[in-house]
Structure formats: structure tokens, C-alpha cells
Image (tube, rainbow, N blue to C red):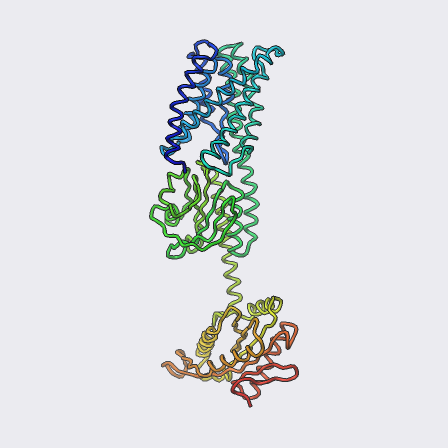
Length: 578
């Protein structure tokens, strides 16, 4: 943000030097015929037309006024060229809709281009005597090239100095894409300017009108070519990304791929991703900045009613803004990095808005209708891919979750066991738990009552859940407890604690077939414990050993006890030893 002092300094500098510059040029430049004529009006109209169709790039706005100003300089003189450049530049800035808080851009750009005109004319007059004798024409093409070269290089240096040392933009470069583009366009502009000068001197008004046609064609053609090229580039990248998104099966993979692609495909200086809860509470979880890359966080946001994020949640529509004065004053807490253009994308799922993506760019008018329409198409692909990934995750979760107890089922347990045995844990222990005489419970109270007991046993087991503990329903009345990093002794002690908890717990049955009132029942459990790699080398062996320890060591020796697997035998552990 430029300070008020600097803004005032720009205006003071312009009010002093611009009139002085016009006076010096008028007073001391070569005398020329009266330029207030129909012919000059044609050139002036041409320059305004060129200014009204600029080329919008990611970093700046380009327009081909120097081609017209060069012709006017040669035909009508430097003073007439200064007036034409000033009027054309005013037309460009008015079209760009520069707001009052950026009024300093008017004097800054006007003074810069006026100085460039004088500097280029000085180079032309300096080299013309040296080149004219070897030229076959009244106006040397070489001298015109020198004029254009000085104007181009001077403009690049001036922009670099102003951005870096006046605005404090440390990322600005002296040689960039803008310079390359200007060089390429100059290859067209100089010959066309030369033709325009020649036609005017030969045919007067008719020649000026004929010569204006190539300028109009080139201006519109380059503008159309640039937009078409950018559209094709975007469409190719969007198509590739859309295919990539459809291949992702995890929601976090879809979101991560989409965020990275938005930052690389489209003009984005910074990006923030927010999660939105059912109560519309926001947390910023990802921030991307061009020079810093992607950062993850968990930052809570308190939004005002005027915030563009709040509006996007409410409207569920894509919102975009051309300049910071339209939105940033209401969103002090939304972003802290420099931004002008802004684009908000609500992340929609079946439950409504579950996230927000905020894109921003330091250049004004960056997110135009064309660009937003492309992003809108891509965002629809993203929404479909995210819904598909969520649906796939739900199916996967359902396929690995026991319907009755909500614990992981055998499939999920087997997957976790394989991961544990092939992970970095030195030891993995397993407890197999089977409820005693559970068939009698079903026969006495009914299968629905039995399901109630199983559900309550699952809830009781979840008390023992820790980071390294997985509890699953193995089937029927059998449960398994996977213990990563537990020794055999630690596993046996935990099994004994679980056995005691089950034994003394009173299970409530509300759907008994013999009594309408709530019935209290007690159950016990027999358990087997085995440890990898002490007892086995494979996952199937570990399950088999723990299962045998439970049946042979506990069930067949009286039930309601814990048995630890040993090579060749089974050893009881805990209070129920005999």
C-alpha cells in the first residue's frame, strides 16, 4: 500500500515537471505546421481506439500506442506527439476504471510516458544526421528503430525503478515476459509505422485512413491472438486436471491436487483454503503464496457480515472482484498479504458448503469473465470428483465397519494387522476375546437382546482405545485387540484388565423376549494372547496362535480366563489360573 506522502509527492512532481516539459518542447522543438487538423484528428482517434483495446497480461496492461505516437512524431512533431500520448493514456486509464484511492496512477503514468517521448525523440534527432545520408528515404527506417528501441528500453527501466524503489516491490525484474512481448510487437509496429508515414505523405487524409487499417487490425489481432492463446492453454491444462481429479479416490487427495493446480494453472499470487463447519465456523487449513509455497495450519476465522467469505457461504456462488477497494476493507482478517483481484470458490458437497477457496492476485482486473468461466467449469469437475471420493470413502468405511457395533470388521482388522507387522514396530501383540456361553444368552433372552449385549461390550472395549490399540469385531461374539509395540506381558496384563471389566459389568437388555422391563445380565469372556515375532513370523500364524490359546487354554480349562500362547503349550495368566 503506497503512503499518502508518496501519493502527494507524485502529484507535486507531475504538476511541476509536466507543464515545464510541455513548455520546453513547444518553445525549443523544431517548428511544425499547425497540427490541429482533420489529419491529426484521424491519428488522435486511432490512438484512442488502440488505447481502448489493451492486452491484459498477468502482470500488466499493454497497448500499442507507441506505434501511432511514432508516426505522429515524424509527421506533426514532438509537441503534437506529447498531446496525443497524453490523451490516449487518459483514455486507457479511464477504461481501466482507476478508482479515486489510486488517483496517483494518473500523474505517474502520464509523466513517465511524456518523459519517454522526449527521451526517444532526443535519440532520434541525435542519430538522424549520422544515418540520413545512407538512407534512400526522407525518413530513415533505422532512426525509427532507434526511437522505438529507446522508448521500449526506457519504459522497462522506468517500470523497474518505480516498482522496486518507489513501491518497494522486491520481486520485480528488469527482464521479464513484458519485455519479451514488447520486443515481438515492435517487430510489427515499426514497419507499419513506416508505411503509415509514407502513405500519409503521399495521399494525405486518404493515406492516413488506409494506414490506420493495419494498426487497427494488428491491435485487435494481437489482442484476440493473446486471449485465444491463453484460453487454449487454460483449456488444455483444465482437461488434464479434470482427468487427474477423477482418478483420485480420497477426498484429501482431490482437494490437494485441486489447490496445487489452481495455483499453477491460473494467475494466482496467493491462495487460502478454509473448512466450513455445519455452524458456518471457518478454519484456514492451507495457505499458498507464490514465494513461500504451501503451508498447512489450523487458524480459526471470525468473519464480519461484509466479508466476501461470509457472502460466499451464504450465496453458495462464485464471487470475484477486480480491485481491493471493492472487498478488502471489509476483510481485514481474511488475508494479510498484498492483493487486488480476488476470487472466492465455495466447496459444495451434499451437506452444503464444506469449504472455501480464496484466490488473489496483485494485478487489478485479473479475474475477468472469461477466466472465471473456465474456473467455473473446472470447479464443477472438482465438485463431482470430491463427491465421488466422499462416496467411495463412505463405501470403503462401510465395508470395513461392523454394522452392529460400529467397530472395524475383519477386513479392516486384517489390513491394520498387515500394516503393523510390516511397519517399524519391533513387537505386535494380539488378544482374541470370545464371550462365554453366549448362545445361552441368545436362547434365553432372544437374538435382539444378544445384539444389545454385543453393542455394550463394544462400547466397554472402546474405553481401552489408544493410539497403538485397535479393537475390532472378529465375528459372532468374538472380538480382537491389536496392540502395536506391546510386549507379551503388557498384552496379558491388559487382557486381564479387560476380562475383569467385562466380568463385573452389568449389561442392560431392553428387548428381552421373556420380560418387557429392562433386564440385567452378566457375561464373562475367555481370551488368548500371542506376540510377534516371539511366537510367529506371519499374520495368519499370530491370529491362529491367539485363537488356539483362547479355545484350548481358556475355553477348555474353565472359561473366564486369559491364556498366553507359548511355543508348544499355553500358559494361563491372571486370577483365573488353576
